[in-house]
Length: 319
Image (cartoon, rainbow, N blue to C red; front, side, top):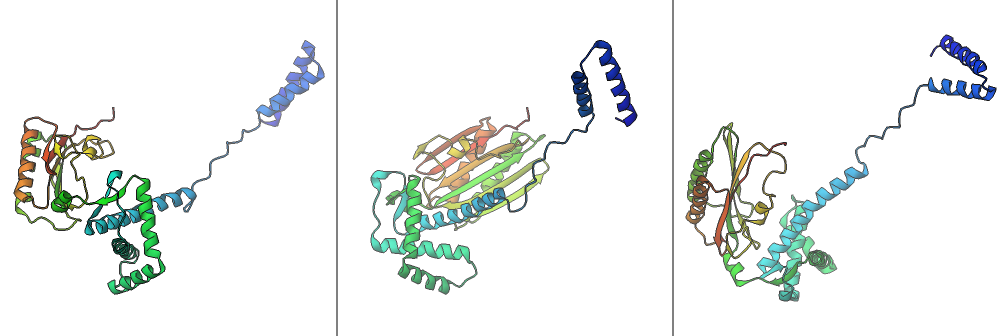
């Protein structure tokens, strides 16, 4: 409001106030309120922008780095236990105490895996020297105690490895995921699965836990991923010794993408023991493909860790 406008407003209020018999105090209060309403209103204080290295960043990086690190440590612990004839179990009635010699070997194995993880370019002889020193000063034993106590807090105890596990493991596993978008139809996915079954039957199976993965985009409407790997820990994919229940991650939906997707997903898994032939795994994939072609959307058939499972999703929508 300009000075001329404000002066006019003051004169109007004074004349009007006198005319209606207002007191001087009332007139002054009215003038003050009118003046305040013309002042520019201040903006609310904005929140400071996050900066690199803020506590939120530090917590996220800490969680990321330590999750990968401890997953590596737990894998090394499990591998060392298996080599000595033991396993981690959730059956407390089977809990045993490790003999001293076994415990020392496991502690050494875990320490060497830890040192290799943190400094992957160092020589094996250097790691072995460090492992000997860590055994002398008690570090490797203390580190093993920490890992075992952490496992126990989650319900995992040490138990003798079953004779079946020693004979059957590592399991052979094949997972095929076919992603398909319109205008493809189910028979295209079935044909793709049949072709991949022949590949599983004929190509050499990888002999490492890391396994192998093959991916291919056939066209704009279909893509597949094939993962073949070994699994050295129970219970593998199937939740029971024998049955038709889906693997837990498929039944819960965790095997599917966490985001909305317009695609349909065809998930087929085949599993067998260390003695299972590739022809058996391929036959399981073929049976799953036949059932999908017949209109089934999920199913499983397995016995003694060997068999197959499949699941067909529906396209997600934003509705």
